[in-house]
Length: 385
Ligand SMILES: Cc1ncc(COP(=O)(O)O)c(C=O)c1O
Image (cartoon, rainbow, N blue to C red; front, side, top):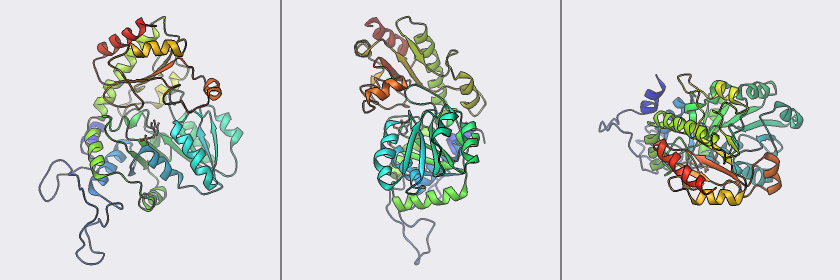
């Protein structure tokens, strides 16, 4: 089926007893059994739920994967994936990964004997430098937040598979509409469905997707054994949102491209980070790797840009009205944030300087509003710069 058709239909069928077109919210903790162990495929709400299954099948189809498992947050998805490992194993993670992911590996999994190195995964030489015989997983985010550095997923998959390690990709930033890492060789893809997949800033959730049956079997076991599952209502909300994922992503991408070009043409802005811009150093990789299901390149809705310093950024941000000053991303409404004081405040100043994250950096998460209104809002902010 075509991608838009899958977005609307995959995993969903009219409900058998009533014909309800929309998959109901099966808000139940348990299921009646006809006789001991004789049931309709569902025993207990943590183990399985029809609304959750519909969401899992829908998202498996959109990532072009076979097996998907839903979780109560993106972090619950990451935590469950990390439980595929054992104490003593070594993980390499993208240095500029979502802060909560780095915190989880460093401050939680390290207590259980997991070893972790964070490196710039855009350069394979960095992996060679820290690779050990215990390395079992490479955990990659591309593009990174907020500097939008890309890693070459096809090359990383080949590198990992030569060494019998798993490539895990956090695909939250691109959504499956503009990047499908399983098609590029990744073993596991995960998302914070809180972001583009749900797209309405009203649910916290996560999903893990794979094509490999032995990994799927273990993930199904862990989903039940660990139990970090989402509520049926949250699954229903996300399922409602995925029907419009292609439409939203196309509008977000078009808006973001126009805004990135506007920002780049403004002399008050020092540097714009957006892989769709002709001068982005990894544009060629973006054109190869970030493709919609119909083969057209897409660059997503995240844009960052440098203002001279924190004071200027503050003046700019207080002039903005339509973009809401808030953390998070991926919703239909545009958000704006100042990474140094907000999303990345926990990254030590020295580390921020090392990776090039300046105090004047501003990050946009572009939504689906009229682009003229978004640009007018940015112009108001720039008048104060
Ligand atoms: C790229 C990325 N991965 C994972 C997460 C964690 O997801 P959640 O907040 O749904 O637990 C986030 C949250 O911001 C994120 O941006």
